[in-house]
Image 1 (cartoon, rainbow, N blue to C red):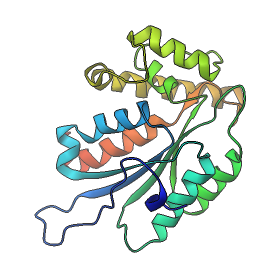
Image 2: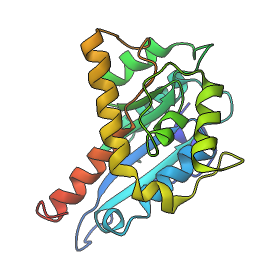
Image 3: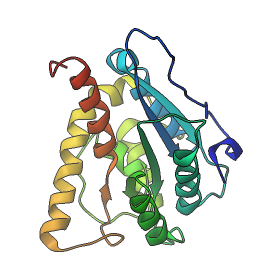
Image 4: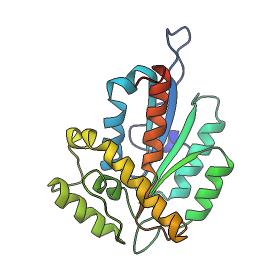
Length: 216
């Protein structure tokens, strides 16, 4: 299934010929309809990001698997209709029942130049890390409940002001989790809790710094 068959906020991005500064284009595919999309919109709306990046957000239909997302990203990466510099997929592992075809999705993405931001067990862990460091095993329900306790929300929506300010801390905590798993010899998908959302955030910010000659 290509992105053109996916629901949500997808928008085909093409470079504008003759523009004063050609923007770097990211196409990002995610399975969530609330928190993931709102968080990406937060990043997309940062003034420094808007100046040098064009970000397309593709939301999968309900029930899509990680492999479905990767298939769509790979299809669009081969398409002449979408001129993107980077394609990313954001998806969860889930716990206690994991998504099917996780390894297949990971292998196909790597073979086709699609980058991944996987969170184990779910995206809410990334939000938790904006508030506190957590390195104990979490089920999906545990992560959702912990995130709600920390930010005081009663639903899946988030407060952009809170998460914008705490983003650097989340990146640091995600790196600490990755280093812990590497030190323990714990490999995907046993690396609960972990997230690669920091890799996507850092890549976006690296483009911003490059556009500003390293001063951002």
